[in-house]
Image (cartoon, rainbow, N blue to C red; front, side, top):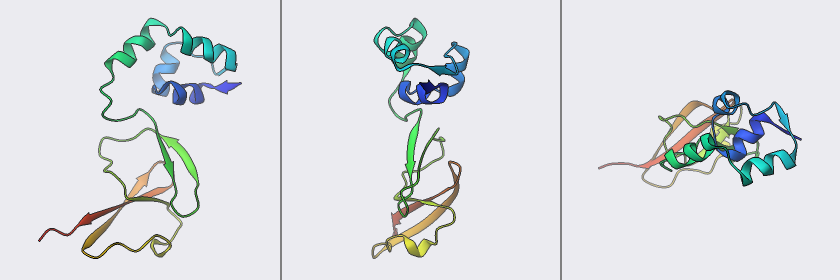
Length: 122
């Protein structure tokens, strides 16, 4: 059995869309395979409309401890060099390279800090 959230992750659609189109709260693997094999018109249209620029779901993984969660990426998220759980110390991450400026962005997913390393502009 898979949950509606897991089905949305696998289909790469928002949870709201899964709810709106009647994906049940729990479904068997066989039911999911049938949905994938013979997608309804709304799913075909959704996939056709995708630009491919940004995924609907993103797997976030802590560089330090490996904790993982799936989250809906926000438009303002930059490309992260590292992700770290918010309770880890910055010293637990690899040191930034010479000539690199490091910034931290709080509030990524439920518990992550995004680390962005950028070359210092001269």
